[in-house]
Length: 400
Image (cartoon, rainbow, N blue to C red; front, side, top):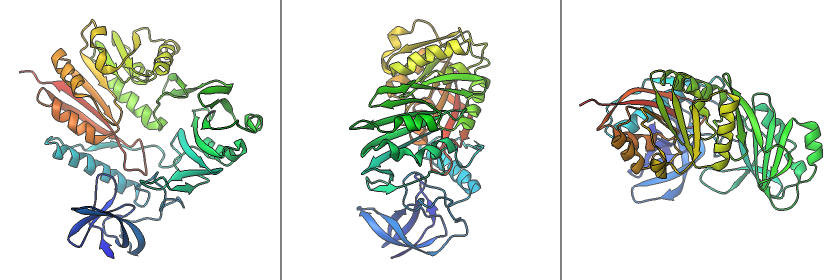
């Protein structure tokens, strides 16, 4: 069955029509004519996969990665960087319109590197083979290299089998020095760890939550800031875009006096707030991240910061002072409605919302815009070659 692709959806899939129904086909681009196999049939649409490209679109380019056609990691490696950036702008603006938000985003900050930008990679080990999963499945895809991962990560990948893990998960984290923290989850003991320690700049090996060697954290540097990052703490995967995000946070807190930072992680955005801010309070649910944050404020000589371990939805009774600015950097699920209501009740003047999911961002903005207006909206290409994009949005309270 041949399908002509006419546009792309919000997940980076091509859209065409088959038997008068929409069909979604990953790894396609407008202008492609492809032969497809139906993988899922619903009442109003199909999902399919390419079996052959009959006529390639003029927008299609040859992916650099040999695994692209089958790997679930990348969505947009078959189009140019400029096309991908335009797609991301169009996608976010379409999501805003869907949420009845009359604001057009025009600016996107490009990543310094299109490839090899990731400082963290997680792979599955299945029957002693290093694998990713195929899209939307648990079908393993054997891999030897990832074009998104930094070179230190790829160098270690080729010797990962020396650990003799039959089945498990391995996460490799690296920093600005190329040092490596290795985190493994598997049954049985790890083998040949001494060989890896001798041949690679490993600062630590964690196995099933226990330290086998060295430290259980990594030190990393962004701009002039140093951060301790525990093995289970969140940290942005693209250092250059993280640096640009820090610059935005600094600029947009210049006129703030007291800042509340929800989902503060290891304290990165709190530390990036302007040094003239009188007080910043970070709230984070992961205990190890809060420990790291308290150390990071000492390392970076910021005595105007405080961090507490708490669920953001249960922190209200612990907050005794008024904050004129709040930073929100939630998980993909977005901000709970009760927190949005709390922000309105407290009449916090400025909201800085950092989002990795434009769908939940659009939903949350829809709930805020009766009392707030958008003053700035910038996209950051945190994840080149994928459909994902980071949003930076500044809102100010409407004065009635």
